[in-house]
Length: 68
Length: 255
Image 1: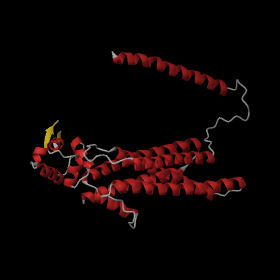
Image 2 (image 1 turned 60 degrees about the vertical axis):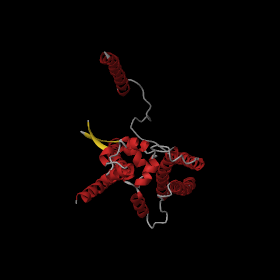
Image 3 (image 1 turned 135 degrees about the vertical axis):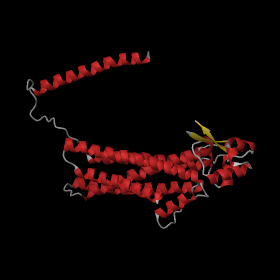
Image 4 (image 1 turned 90 degrees about the vertical axis):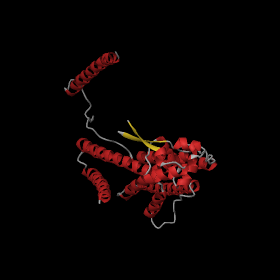
């Protein structure tokens, strides 16, 4: 079983962005960012690309697959 | 070790149950054998006794309690400040309080609506006693007034949602409530929609279980108190309707 893991919180801390600010930049809600960071929700490719764009990194730097 | 101690403690309980069962059987046999003189008017047949005024009193007490919770929640929400946007919380204290207030408001709408419908049904039956007429009239007026108050309060609660989420307002001016729902859903992002889907599926499963439970309850009721087909038929139709709506949506997505 594979699991999607992400480094959104880490990149957010690097860029000193709050969940609210990141949410505004990608046109999502703060709750969605919180869900993604907790690993409860796997975002769509579109949202994943938008998040990576904000951090100026590749999408695979933010999201990766981890085998359980 | 743990299992051994558990099995040891369960053994006396099983024996206790058997002994209590035997004592009960002994008493039952002694009473039914005719060895004791039992009053002629004593009735051992099962029955359910309740007064309608008690039923309405309980319902209205529930409405009143939820009403207080709703009003208190609204006042507390007004007094509460917005948290700093830099705070990374999945849900802010204000949002948490709002969700609780909206929950109380929703429950109250359902309970007050049921009370009003019950009062109407009770009023429509033929009444011959004057005292009953007065009670029925007061009951009807109170239930309608309570429903109006609860509906106005829900409107105020939803207005509070609009204040808290200025970018995602509930459109009160839409021509139908369906349109309002559609507009609100269209404004949600994918994470929020995912929460709605999950909650809806959970509600669907719960409703299925409750409907089956209701049917079983009325089956037992029929066995004990007499044949009662109408609630079983109504619950069956609701169950069927719910599953048809679910299947229709599944088929639409697979087209």
